[in-house]
Length: 107
Image 1 (spheres, rainbow, N blue to C red):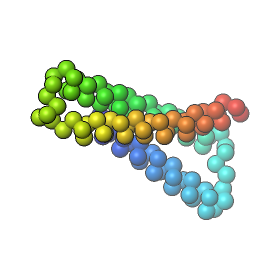
Image 2: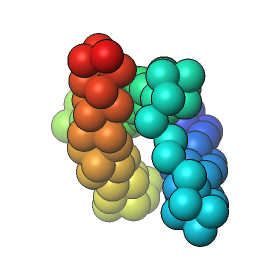
Image 3: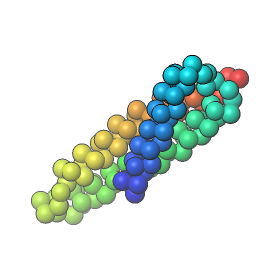
Image 4: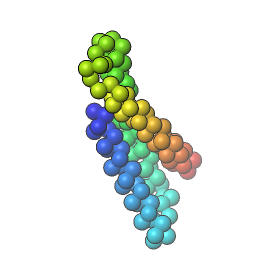
């Protein structure tokens, strides 16, 4: 679930970057309400999926490490690193969602 959610997040962020670069090259403004609402909804969905996946992965990591005590046989450091980076990804996307939502709501 974590790999699928972060993969979707990466594709969404890459497509937004391409749209932004194109808009800068052709000097086009992306401030109409349809585009802003699409950005806000997309950022909201992907950030929610990323947060849910990071939380689920953190729960599984705690289960393996603390409850079962079988971390020596598994790759716990890799699981913990992936979970931490998923939370970092969510913290990076959250301001984009909040600013897009605020821009949409202030119209």
